[in-house]
Length: 105
Image (cartoon, rainbow, N blue to C red; front, top):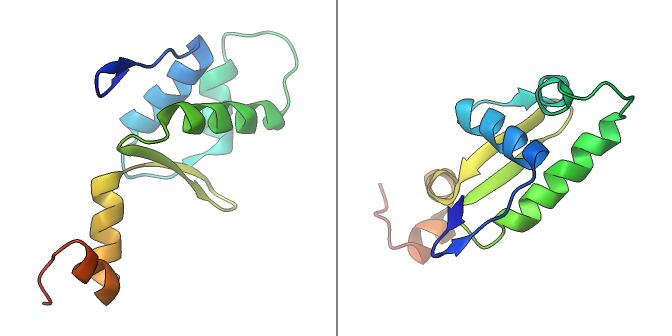
């Protein structure tokens, strides 16, 4: 995987996490579903905190790029691109419209 010209090294679990979020673009994916997808190949006991740790690591590796992982409190996580975030801001914020040079519809 690459971010611009630089490669991003992901562990197997980080890649699995990102893959699930990419496949569910624009949808909130529950922590339980992510947990099953990321840790399904491991037989040992792992807590839900481990998933949160992997989300934090993946966020850090993706920082500065065009992809974000957004927490949906009490529901799970959602993958967002910077374009999605700009559109959401622009649809609700006059300041964002000015900042991004968007029309005042």
